[in-house]
Amino acid sequence: MRRLPTTLRILVLVALALVTSALASTSAASAQAVVGADAPATSGTDVVNGGPGFVAVVEAGGLLDPVLMDFLRQEITDAETEGATALVLQMDSSGVVVDDTALAALLTQMLRSSVPIAVWVGPSGSSLTSGAAQLVGAADQVGMAPGTRLGDAGTPVVDGLDMARLAPITDRTIGTQEAADLGITTADAPTIGDFVVNLPGVETRETTAANGETRREPVTQVRFGQLSLFSQLMHTVASPAVAYLLLTVGLALIVFELFTAGVGVAGVVGAGSFILAGYGLGVLPIRGWAVALICLSMVAFAVDVQTGVPRFWTGAGVVMFVIGSFTLYDGVSLSWITLAVAIIGVLLAFIAGMPSMVRTRFSTPTIGREWMIGELGRAVTSVDPDGVVQIRDALWRASTNRATPIEELESIRVVAIDGLVLEVEPEEGGAKDYRDRSGRTD
Image (tube, rainbow, N blue to C red; front, side, top):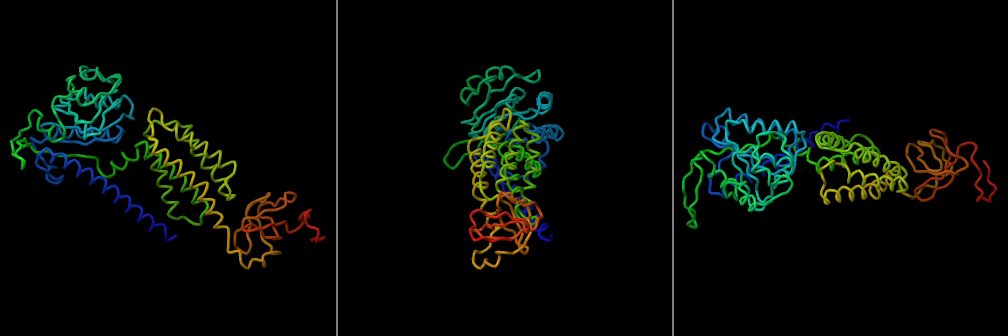
């Protein structure tokens, strides 16, 4: 019982270290983008209190879920309250997982904002598609990094959007050059720094780089904003791939813990993963019956793990897990890499790993076990014809003659040993084996 608090402390420290490392990498990447445009690099501490005349740059990546929507709306409010010159939304999103009402509220706030709001799709490889693309219709300025995509915006959820921008991308996606040709983007913006220096109201100055190239850098202070540590964790958990993997890992570890003694690392990690997966699935558009299939597949796997040999229920579990995985989300697809990792991992765990673990747990060295023949014990589970028995406080896999099934807690006698399996019979009333020609009787 003293092991649990230590385990929890270790898990919390590891989780905080991983999330902090990810956020630090994100902040470094944003700062590097500005340096690439020869803009003065400022740390988060230097710019948090950027007073009047500053430009707020907010990074928003991933699906627009409740966490990210609340964050963007709060940033708009803060920009107005603190007197920002402009607010830049650095976007990389493939869709929206909130209802149209929530999306309409964000778009309306952007349209009514007293601070000019710009949208930059970047860095290279990013996209702004599905309902998230409607943000360009509410923006004052739009920019795209080379190698980015924009489109499939769908039907606008609010009136007043710039239809000159949205009409060409209602049901298709376009690249950087086509967006410029259609007049959707207003300036060449390979980096966030290049985009900021071209915004109206941003003061700049010319500098000469080491290679002799003259470039502009902002004199107006630039402030970067991002999700808090806890919000970033919740936003990550609500991504489709992470929520699916957390559900799979959580259920598998809980099943694993059922076949081990005590509450250890597997049980704590499994329970934590399952809770986080519950939050993520509660935000994402899922099919309830697909979640039920995945849960039932774990029950099916557990049936055969108990016997130590993959049989019918393992096959049923594989079928249910694969179907549930491919149909889990409604309108959101998982990458084949994510599906392959989960399915292959589950197959290895429940076909090879856990049955071997159970066999090892229920077995002891094979030398010197002749003393067990004739020993009395009790059935831990029903033995009909296979089950588990207890001999001198040790658990063993056992089998019995089909004519004399043994009920749970019934007294038994060991009559033979076959490898790691004991052959047992009821203490009283055991059936005679037709193969036994010795004439032995009880």
